[in-house]
Length: 318
Image (cartoon, rainbow, N blue to C red; front, side):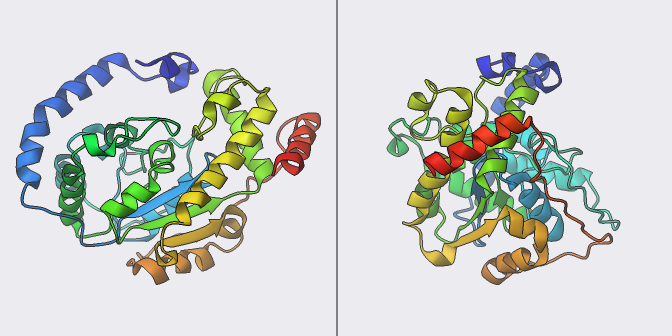
């Protein structure tokens, strides 16, 4: 258990015994995974990456894509097989029969989703391939990324459907490398009104750690400098810097590989935003039984004086 996990409120702590068992399982199966994926090369279909600042609506978008389209993605079952996702995806397919009652579940708690089919951040997997922080030198040449390409190609073959990922911590700061590995990849960049994005990050710190001073979310390139700032200024600059850093990287990616979406537009007319994704990715849409009604979370939900401070800082620093 790492230090950040020890700091979490009780409902969000990991089970140490379960973590040890999963570590043993993933280590034991890795040799077999390598043998199974050896015949694969690279994914044939677009690999889709959802990017953005924490609390910008990325989990909601991931849920919509995973439930509206025929795609493959790391769910809460496959995530347990983080070192051997091809094995995990095959096991999931053999155990779970797809329900004809395809009713949407768009609920989540700090990015955690419910059920075996709920999308997962897949953090252990991505941390293996990008084991550094944003401000550190990236040692890409020390890692054999052909294995990553083979794993995703093999995983794609299980359902013959495009893969979708949302892991902001590792993916947000390795966009150009991912594009070099997967030239047909699509990056969906979600951006939210800054004041409400900051408010949600502030509330998430309290919910996850019972402490507003504990860091929550993506660490931008200037993280070490930000740790010295007062809480509200720190969070404001965190969100602004993440967005700026993402946009700098995307400027080096062809426009045809990037989709920009605003959280507010997604809530207002999700079909319009979904059609942007369809037009670029050619994803196959599924039939959904229940009508989707999205409600905006852009409401003041903290003390007015704190929200007013956030608003002032947004005007000052953005």
